[in-house]
Structure formats: structure tokens, C-alpha cells
Image 1: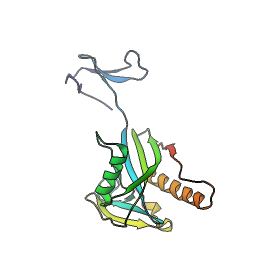
Image 2: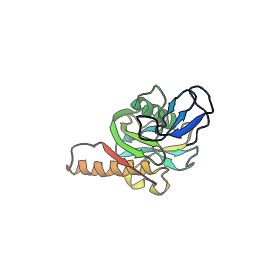
Image 3: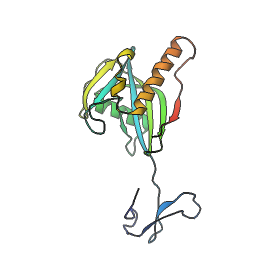
Length: 185
């Protein structure tokens, strides 16, 4: 990612080099010496459940307009990850959820994102489309629109969920584990 100006002093004297004591090249201001670290963005969301169904939202914005997703979005400064996941679910699906546990942590190093999805319960099947959503709907596993899911992280989270749910029902595992993985292009 190219940077033209120092966000610390405003100078246009940036160079891309390995700072002393570091191992990776960074943008460093030749005027004030400030080192600019570019870190991944964090996406937080929920996998809302009502009985045996899961809640999906059809996106009303780009990217991936019109495709289905779990309610999720970028974490805001000053928010805890569970607060951000609840907020995104309320914004996108007008649904208040009870967070159960962190479920998937999916690293996307090629695009500089980290996706954190929580299992969550809908206390009541009350939801509707938010401002960024065309439609919100509960799905049985057999009816998940796999071919029109917006993001690979959503597909991975849902596939893990249905597998783990099956394993729990067969008594082959006791609970939903924390799933940590990476997706590359």
C-alpha cells in the first residue's frame, strides 16, 4: 500500500525501508522519524441461531451486492469484539442476539483482514432487513443458498457449524470448539 504523507507530521518525506530493530519494511518519515505500521482490519459478526435454523442476510451494499452473508462488519475503534458483533447484527438484521461464544477466527492475510464470528442465539425469531440488507431470513441446513454466499469466510463458518452440530448430536464431541484457520487467494 502506497503512502504519500506522514499521518504524524504531514510531511511528504516518506521512505519504505526496514527501520532499525525491525525485520519488515515500513513507511518511515524522513522528517519526524515516525514509523507507520499497517495492520489488518478486524471483521466481527455472528452466526445467529433460532432452534435448528440460522439467520442470513442478503447484502444490500457492495461488495457482493445481493448475495447472502452472516451479519458482520468492521470493528469500530473503542468497541470490544462481542459488542461489535452485536452491533453489526442489530444494524444488518434488526436482531438482538445473546452471544454464546467465539466460534471461528479466520485470517485472510492476502487482503489484510481477520474475521471473528460468534455463535449467537436469537431469544425470539424477531428480525428484519436493516439499512444495508435487502432481506433477512432463517434457513434450515438443507436450504442454505451455498452457491450465492457472499464470502468464503461465511461458507467456512457455516460448514464448520453444521459439521460440529452433527458431531455434537452424535455425541462425538461435547461442544462447539474454537475454529482457527486461514484463507488465501
